[in-house]
Image (cartoon, rainbow, N blue to C red; front, side):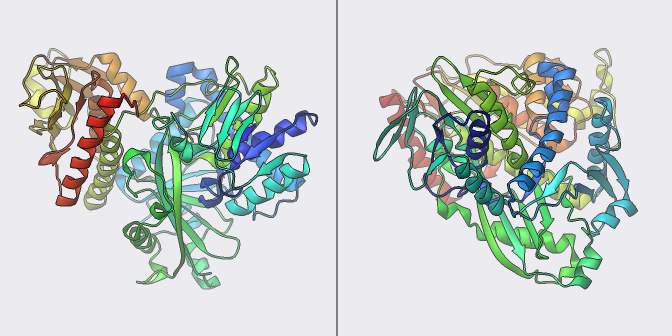
Length: 578
């Protein structure tokens, strides 16, 4: 039994039915096949994997990282093979991906991406650096200074792909029950409003909708990505924009954008930026954020001034994707319970879901293959923090990245590389303010609640940020019992989680990071705070007050925090781990 008729569930059913036609396979879907992210994405069938090569190598070794990337590249070709074999009309075109660099900082990241590829043995046929002319020849966006190109991507019409795949699955004898919501999954059973459906193996393929399942609130964070599409553009406009091979395109900013030239001559363009909603809530109302749509339209106009002052947008839409706590996609099967899963694609799921389906088919049939030996198999991501920490972490991270992009656009310059100071060169510390992270002071109250006191200013210094403590027994002013400094290993773990590769030097009260830009240092600060933040049950740190992460709280948010506070007190009373 498979719960979820998106790409993951349908690919799993497709390969299972093909490998063993005697299996009885049922797919349960709360809406219609492809209703979620599978039918609403940017149409990139790419070899992108949310965990970097360097991070995979640190966790699993160099060979495992290379195997993972090579398999992802082969996956793009496999999806193309199935599309052709099944006659799925999804506007498939393998034009590759061009990622533009429009600032010096972005150009530095482009070079770093190519350097990493070379370090792991991937040559120009896999990724190559483009100069300004080469990049503009593929995608003539405004202010292009260079970029990268990889052939390992195809543009597709995502909804046509998922609906065509559903028909192919049914032709193989699989039953799909649409309009059949599942509220809980347990060993051997899926619970629906109409009754309990039983099977020896249950596959959870629900991605951004996973928090809606009982007991899964903290498994992934549903983060919304929104899109716009233009009217069909005239040939003379396309002659100036490029994308002649229907390359998918992006740039090296922090807040992800993505686009493609559709088969009918539109620009389909999307990006992150919508807020994470408290409690991992998912709602059709969240698919539409007018401010985000306006921002996407503005960015599209900035990229391609030929579109004019009013970009001719005809369609807008959006939906949630799934983000694991460590940004690591995973696939696996617990044989003791018969529960299988795949997800956490962080928006890179069009190709990765195919690999997940093939891998699950092998795992369920008990086959040991090259796919079941890949490093993402049976990876267990940690749970996200309870609220309000989850809300703070996701939205603060988004704010940090957005601010970094705005800063880069203003300065349009790259800070020169610097070397970390030696331990015996204390006199030079003042010259290294831009590279230092002052350790947040992790303090405990007299009733045992830990919290982090401080926010970073532009130089990395820590200022006072009062966070109120919620303690059902007694509320009082926080007092200091002890301090908590991160260890070098904890800092390296955070760098690994974020996909950053940087040597670190930890001294009492300081963390030196060489080669990270300001926005990445802030991201490390933020993750350190929450990775080391210790919440001792049954107490919870609060999140209301005059400042949150250095930003003033408006009256509406103050009301929200009051409601959060009440929810937390109830959670303490009733022991709700979510």
